[in-house]
Length: 89
Image (tube, rainbow, N blue to C red; front, side):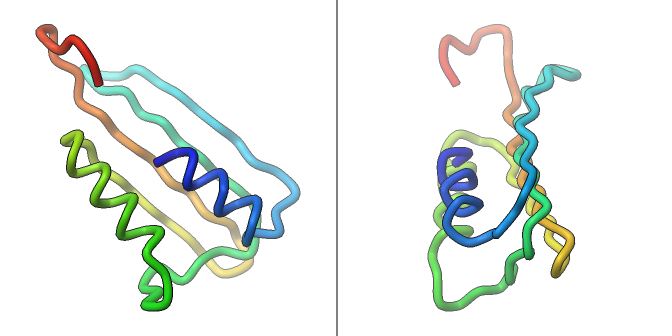
């Protein structure tokens, strides 16, 4: 999911800065990817990228949050719950 976000930034965003963040908070891992690029159309009917990312997140029981403003960049956060008995994510 994050690889797709990074790839999309490189191909489309025309950004000059990016930030990758990883946090462990309240039994969850939050991975965030932010760029200061041109933003994206959240309801893009011509591409499958966001839908594929959402599907992958659902497969691992994670939440995907996508925020984008034209000319104000994009923020993608993947929030993965962690349980004591989990052996893999």
